Length: 281
Length: 162
Image (cartoon, rainbow over all chains, first blue to last red; front, side):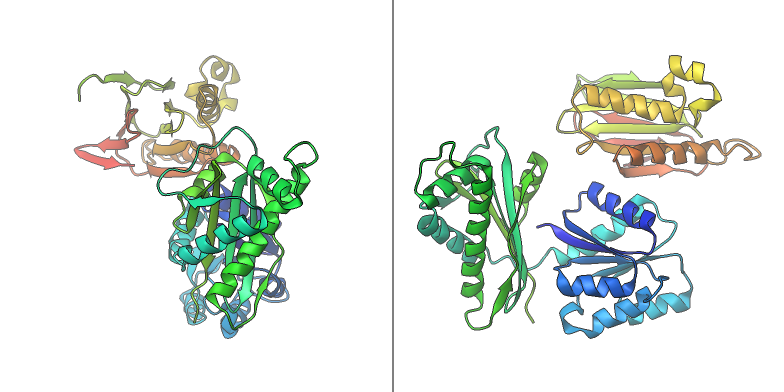
């Protein structure tokens, strides 16, 4: 499961350095967001799914301590991991941060390796959310069968081999009755087949990459709706639109090895479905 | 161990291999910097033992012996790894040496500067250091076992896995 990370610092250089470190450090980073002060950061946290925040203290408009206090006073963000990265190191300041329930603390100047260590420590505790694998597999198999008329069998042990073609992934988040993120990854070939089946045509030249991406996004969207309903039949959950992207082999392998991922054999092609649910209160 | 062959990397030298039976060793790392790169997917590994931080001190020498300087040495080792199929994403980099108290007056800070230049070149090449044993004053021996990728440092009687 990829983590959406928000980096809050008034220095563009520091933000760049932190983001590059996250990208290199074997930390599964999804989208990255940047804010130049605490107020911008709060706006981003309100409008997007964020799993981890790295924030400076001294910033114009709203400083990091105030930002942290406001996050903690909002029940939706009370548990959001926040790592403070700053030049300040007085014990008074650290006590203030601890009072505001900071997750971890790194003092500048830091090396990329120091950032990695702290982020590793913090993320090792957050990626342990609920996985709901059983409900997820049922939801996905039903969508395959009804919507794209394909047979998906949960892969016990090895997945079917991956061919040489391109790989696609679709991700979306949901919030409300249940909070979480869900990702489906499949070879382009499988997505072309999904699109062709849904439209009712042969998977020939008329089904291009655009339709294949759209089909994967829609399969994800419906799977997500299905899953959310199974987990929380009464309360409303809002779904964000799916985002479809290409993926490289290491990303595929990483997703395949995640505990929250279920593998499917979809008519001889490997498909991965991964879902992480934020623990419910 | 049987069937292994020890490959010794001298000062201002480097060695790259894809032979899993090789054990790469460099002795007497003082303020010099030792770097091992290992790609478990491509099964390629290499080691550098660089003496001085910057090749700008003697560009001609650096051209004929890039492993003498940390900046040209790290770049040469990386390039040799890439040439044998290693990728940035799977390279594991470990560092030893850069002892700080080697020159008596501490005037030149060779160890610190070697380490800083090494960090800069790796960072610009999108590689983070996975483990390190640097600084202090004791000389070190650095070993990379190609079969497993195990990397360790010997200093006096102590052995430390990186």
